[in-house]
Image (tube, rainbow, N blue to C red):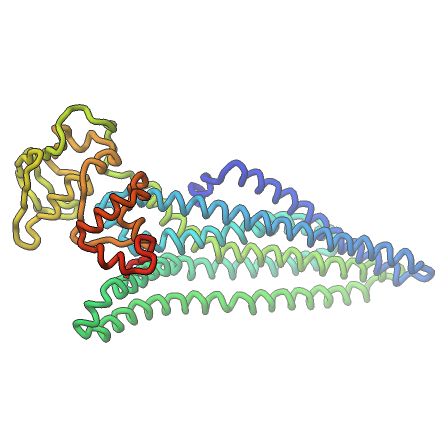
Length: 475
């Protein structure tokens, strides 16, 4: 998590410091309110007190409350801004990183997991920053400051409060021990659920053609039931927190008043009012101390899952691409359209045997070259070595007498046209899809028409309402 938070911008760090200052001011106002309450209590019990004095103290108490509320609103806005801004940049960085992955690295994480990491995992980080920033800074400050306020009061009250806090801490530790391991399983289960859902949507025609709906439903049910089982366990554990914490607070309040009644009974006539006033103030401060630890307990609920998500995100960001970019971004000779394989061998990273072994051939400019073989013989693998979707294990692939490893990848890809086995369609207009990646020719209507005509799609496109500007999407 700390590695990820180091990526906060200077502006975000400055806003965090501003939030801390506002939180300190907010805590000071919260702790001043009980003191005014104590003074009002004494004035009410003192004969001859003026109503104007009570109203003045009440006005100060109201100002403290309104000031604290204003501070809380500003801190809430700042934390929301920081968390959304950070998650925006993190999501963009993660997306850009994945775009640079080769096929090996994508398969290492799997498409489903990368989708989850870019969406759900970043959402967990955003939630942690939004809620955690307010709780992490406010809770310790409020707890320590309130403890300083009550430490010189009756040791009986202090001991009761300390015992309640200790009980809450033990309960939190038990929760963390049981719940923390489940959070990683939840994220992995979401990966699998995304995988089955994506597989079902992409293969819907095949599923219906083979009447495999029941099979897919059972497959989805197994993954869904596993995720539900884990989440149900987590939610059951979490559901015990609210009643346990409420019970602790109620018992603490009851204990403070019970001990207070005993102390008032033992106090002298002149001291009874002071003891009663101290009891009212102490009960307020004790609730603040306990609520501070309750808020910190929320961090122990949010942080484990956010920590798991941060680890998963860092795994992607810190993955070094095995395909290193070259430095050639211009033509160094007059050769155009020549492809050469020089003693090329290749095996997949997780394979023990070579898919291609000692392949050598030359395709001269203007020649037509066909690769024929049975399914799984390595035809597509061989083609994927030219644009460096994979790098050769041994040997060299040359384009225009230059090793493809020496080219910058974007320049290398401009030197070839590539038609994959499976057509890819992106949400947008026909014009954007046909000129995909070639922004210079996106508005060149003659080239677009020529390309569509060669693809024998002219009649289909011309009959659409908006023709080349018609919207299409992946089905």
